[in-house]
Image (spheres, helix red, strand yellow):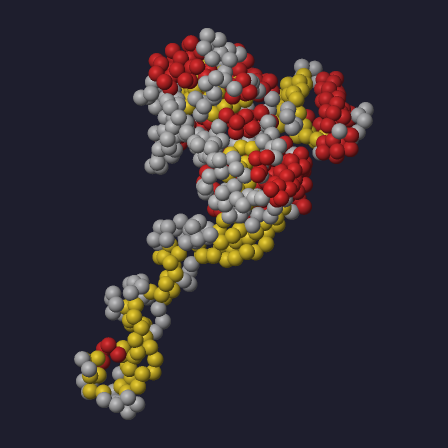
Length: 605
């Protein structure tokens, strides 16, 4: 939520350039970013932006695409071309014309990120907060590979990886579907214009094709970008094991129905998925959405190359899946089935061990097994090596030579001798030596972890279709992604008045529990009409019944609706909100299932 003007941000201060010709967007970005402790400069056109970038070092440059004098693409490309030796800022395109940006003659790949309008403040803040990590890698090019890795070949001055598309020989390309391809459209650091378009405009591609051998690490961009994780993954080269939804490395013409069925099933299940799960940035919620559209269980498979010793049928590191799945299980959204129990290093969490017998004294694994002798006359017992003198056996205690087995001595058993410290024992220790951090742990104190396969519970399936409203409004917090631009501006204006003179206000968050039911039975248009009428009725009722000096202004969101009630005490309004909700819904054709939660100024800090 927007912070009051007095809020002190704990984030690291960064220099930010905002190039924007809209006064409203300028005010919004400057207000929010300065409240978070950043230093913000505002310019009105592309020429001023280029001059500012030339004269001062910035951490982030937020550029509108359609700037006067010089558009945002030209500003970014001119800077990167003219100042190649500078590290430079992260360039972020902020535009309502995503398709125009993506089809620009210079493309949008001069930018590190693209954020569509209306401005999603949480996305802007996320980009800025990520800047320190990006700059610490000393990576001036948005598409360069990570530090320490081999630099890819590029297609010229832009520094964008030049990838040769794989031959289109599979029968799959005869089908009338649209595909994103690895590595042409994405890798661990880079998204192509087509992939950006899919995530930003929700232009629906039908599947992701793997056309070159790779590992799951290449899929980081899919899971960090909205909507792409909901596409089926089809492996054309056989490099993935159970991470792909379909292995088509040996696809024949008479097997094309497998591809059609997979893609159509994903289409049908995506339609059922609630926007909360489509637009979320939370990995756990993305996993819920992925399991819903794929119709698959979350299944582990043994893999010695991973620290957890397993891989799941997701293109997400197993360690991350385990953490998220456990939280989802605790929330009742996933049902777990036991798979196996593994040992875990207490220092680094890895399950990759060398398990061995070793010395109880020095923990060396340099052990040898030998017989131990019992001298009948003096009762001395010891390792055979202690008795051995050349070809003779001589008791080390009484110095008598032993000549006859069974009369002078016997061999009642064996013992273990450490060749490093000469310690002898009948029972060596079991030691677990971590292959990742080299920590040794005794076998009797080693930690264990149970591994599970998972499937959506009934509660998880309902959450996938109904969104946060199903969990109860108290289970979720407001997110910038759900807030309309004009609401963010209104909230900051109210917060400013609250800090200056104590003028109270309340924020109403409105959700609709019966949305899916009404849309299924009567269509989306019918629900939209009822929703609009409810919001209008609510505004009318509150403006009529609230005390003089108060006012109610409503705002339409993507998934939820909102209202700001100025001059109201939140606690008093909470006592009346059920009455207002009933009054607003009296004349509606269908019960919309409205639920309203009230926030006060103290809740928004």
